[in-house]
Amino acid sequence: MDDLVIALEGTLLASINRDLKKFITRNQNTKFLIVSDYCLDDKFKPNKVASFTIIPYDFDLSEYTKRLQKMAPRDLKRSRKVNESFVEHISEKRIFSVSFVFENLQGLTQGATAVGKDFINPRIDNTISMIKVWIKNQPDQKEYYKSIIKKLIVLKANINSKSPNLNLYRYVVLIPLLAGYLAYLLSKEANAEIVGWFSDRDKIVDAWNGVALDGFALNHNAFCERNGLESSKTKIVMGASSASDKKLWSDEFNRIPDHLAGALASWDMSTNLCTQTKHMRLMEGCFADNDFCAIVKVNIEASNYQFSRVVVTTSN
View (cartoon, rainbow, N blue to C red):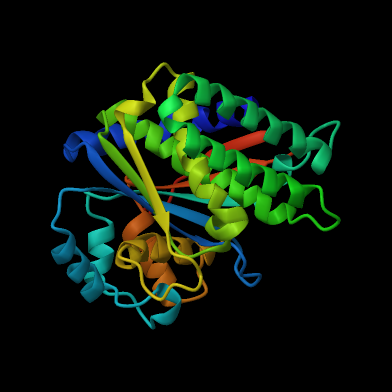
């Protein structure tokens, strides 16, 4: 996993972090929301995408929610076209988004000499060992950390079953890793006081008693520890609605990554075309020539980890 983190840091620190610093300088704040949505299971779209949007928490919640509801009353797939005011809002310099396009994730469940449970079990065990150390160092968090260990044991039982869900496991590992790294960057560059991650409804955050949400906190803690920061200086909060919930306060906020993920999922990079006009409008209006709306291709093979920035421009 260290090689994966090194590859991740190489891209995000070298490229995206530079733009994130500009964003932080422009939007002076210490409280942030990270909202995310995904387009991962549509076999008819060329890309599998997870989009994360960072929003400074400097607004009146009720008023901003009403504004978002007016601009985007429905998810992208339920909308015939996109509201121009919403496109303009997403491309404003007060919102920072990173969308990851997943090409190959097999390296999350196999290595050069081990595959499946033989590859995964030691990693779960290492995580449990790390948490046990944290219990000793942070006794006030003992009960919370013990609850995470219980969830990891349930996860490990699935991995060792006759029909483990390896595809879901890959996303449960990777999505909170990415969210946790973005939170770490906010701690590092903005001295963030509070960072909250709020995911849209998805089996990723429902699986194995919601262990992905705990993974967000664990990854933020681990990245801070790895780079000499005190993670306790940033209060980490997280939440998500389950598939059965009809409404969550963050639904309107999640429309931003929903639109980004939906458009990017339909974008054929080889032809520079989208399946629908609404998708192309978002590609041109939000992604193109916008340093604050980044795209990163992710290719995680057994012994080769690559994160590469994709640039979209309207220039000929």
